[in-house]
Amino acid sequence: MSDIHYVHLLQYYKVAYNNEQLVHFQQASESSYFVDNTITLLKYINILGQVYKGKGESGSRGSLVQAKFIGSTGEHIIAYTGQIQYIFTHSFTPPPTSSSLTPLLRTHRRPTQLLHNSQHTFAFIKWYTPENDKSREYEHVETCFPTFSPDDFQCVLPVHRIMLEVATAEHTTRRKVKKMLVIPLPKKQYI
Image (tube, rainbow, N blue to C red; front, side, top):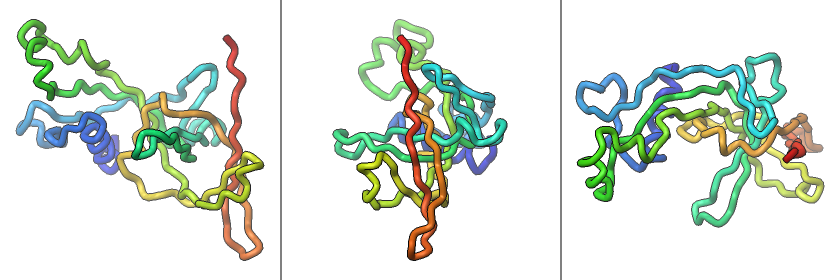
């Protein structure tokens, strides 16, 4: 993984596991709890019959997505639009942090395996800059700016949070402001 993107992966794990003690792989000698920079790239991933892939894999089809984020109060689900840059797996088992794990530490050699899957599947996504205009909401079309937000730890997205594929089209307003229309492409689920 590139050094630029690795910093976001490390920060993702610190936030996801609420553990600021995790260290950079270059400081692995200072702590036994470090995040490795080795990843395995995937060409695509199939989620419930929908194939998603990075932007470099034969065009952009399957790379434009909406993903869900839960609002700060935990009540609202907010969808953001972005483009998958690549999909990857990463192995990481978080260190035990809770006193409730103490009995497990005494009875199991590797207790964290009982609580967490060590292999995680992520998409590295560049997010489009959101726009607050809700004028097309009744048409089921959202708008955002055709530029990407700065990268941060939220670019590292567990693939189970991908909601659906989207189509996009550029639109220029009467005031010559470029915007991007986002049209959800829901797929029928066969059970």
